Every structure is written in C-alpha cells, then in structure tokens.
Length: 66
Image (cartoon, one colour):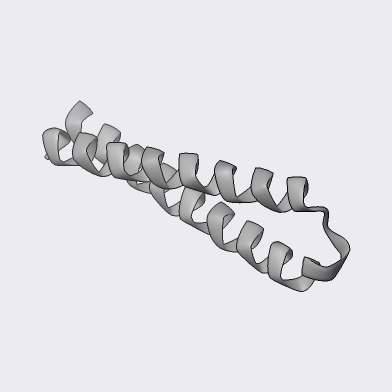
C-alpha cells in the first residue's frame, strides 16, 4: 500500500471519528437541553461548527491524496 493510500485511509478515519463526535455532542445536547446553560449550548454549537469546518477541509485533503 502506498503512502498516499495510507494517508487517505487515515484521513477517512479521522473524518468518520469527527462526524461521530458531532453526532454524540448533538445527542447529548438534545438529551440535556433543559439542564444546560445558554453558554454551554453555545459552546457545543461552536465546537461542532469547528468540527464541520475540519471535516470539510479533510474532505478536500483526501481528494488530493487520491
């Protein structure tokens, strides 16, 4: 397996893990909505926005690897 294939697989795994983290955070937020402060909700929303930005950047990177 070439280095590019290894990097592509690694990036794909990171993308999948990041998407899983987004989903877990959203599920947590939904389950505890009434218990969370506005700031905590905003923090989760902001972190997930950064995660989505990372996923987009990684998807572009994986295109370059293949």
